[in-house]
Amino acid sequence: MSEQFTDVMIVGAGPVGLMCAYLGQLCGINVVVADKSEGPLQVGRADALNARTLQLLELVDLFDDLYPLGKSCNTSSVWADGKFVSRQSKWWDALEGCMHKHFLMIGQSYLEKLLDKKLKDRAAPVMRSTSIANIELNEKGCLTTLSNGDRIQSKYVIGADGSQSFVRNHFGIPFEITRPQIVWAVIDGIIETDFPKVPEIIVFQAETSDVAWIPREGEIDRFYVRMDTKEFEMQEAIDKINRAMQPHTLSFKKIEWFSQFSVKESVAENFFVQDRVFLAGDSCHIHSVNGGQGLNTGLADAFNLMWKLNMVINLGAPKDLLQNYEDERKPVAQKVIGTSAELVRSTKFSESGTHAEDYVKIVERRAGNITGMGVRYGEEGLPGSRVFDFEIFDGTSKTRLYSLLDYTKFTLLVCGDCNIDQKLPESVKIIKVHPNKTHEGFWTDSKQYENQAILVRPDSYIQAAAPLDRIDSLFESSLFKVAAL
Image 1 (tube, helix red, strand yellow):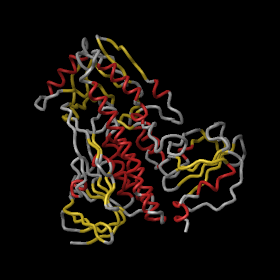
Image 2 (cartoon, rainbow, N blue to C red):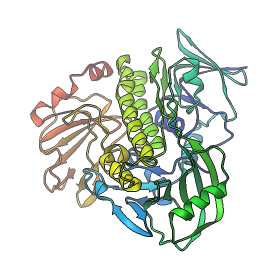
Image 3 (cartoon, rainbow, N blue to C red):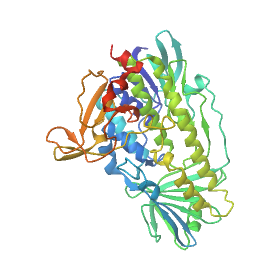
Image 4 (cartoon, helix red, strand yellow):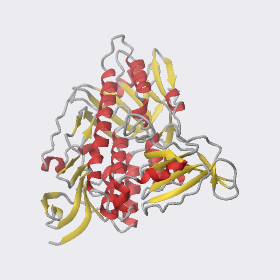
């Protein structure tokens, strides 16, 4: 038996737990991650990263490793009566301040393997084949006892341990589950078909819209098939696919993964309890896969949480900043539940019998959640909105704002010509962007944020904005006054 000390104990090494650990490492937070699995996921589960997640990955140097491995997809199509009756992507085209107007279709395993390797490279590998026996709160924070008897004393615990979360159950956090009695099969494999294959998400409309075709990376394709009974064989699901795509046919040359799931919906009553314990990802919100929001929402939890822990642990920020994690992320989870619930129910119920077309219209109406680009923390104005990406030049070399942001710091973005007289806190980096071509420093043709100073949070949401002659007002928050001491 041994005892170890760390800043943050992370329970669960799925994509959310791994991302929390990786972001913590970038920020100089000591982390320990434990998971009962033997290694990262190999096949199955989530299948897409949305546009907002792709932006977030750019902040932390993960984008270039993952992007070439996936397949871009921005079109949702409807197939009925032997032909495409609808093909739409206009909600992507309408996105502002976004350079990646599509999903990246890529299996969850690629992200897990990359993050697992990054942690090993930083000498902070996941403690595998290890479950949690107990978590006690004490005067130092949290004392976690592992299944091997070892104990980890930490300041905080993050439960990123999925829908059956030990952490959530251990601390008695209410998590009431709704079950709409909708059961799906999911099949990943390499197919043979005479169907006109396209890199689009296709919803098939027959009596219902009970089949969806999802393009995947490499040679893989995924099919979701609504079965509505827990007892079925894989061939029954394949038969449904063939009925839906008539007059064409399909068979599988190779099955990579076959599973079934029943739709469950819930949001935890709390994401932060006892001033020490956080929930993130599926441990605090679960819903149907429709809209591809589960993985993306969980990763956004991690990006929202870890910079706040960094400010409190390493920079002396007020601890009430941590409650802001729940205040911001719980409403987002509730909206995600609303989106996925409307989508999944539309596959079964339609007043007009146009199930698939109804589905695509819901996607268009709720595109802000599905793309991730409509998520904001606040009702109106710049504060709480995501900072837009735009082209910036360094002399003649072209780059973009998101290539310059740093997750470990706030960014003071100054769009215009002015002098900065005041000394900035150590937690803030400055990017000055001139309004016209210059031989020194950054410049842009974009009018985005012209003659404004924008204080950008580490997770690339806007903290505050002011005219260039009021830059000092951006740092009146106690967050910076305490952190600067």
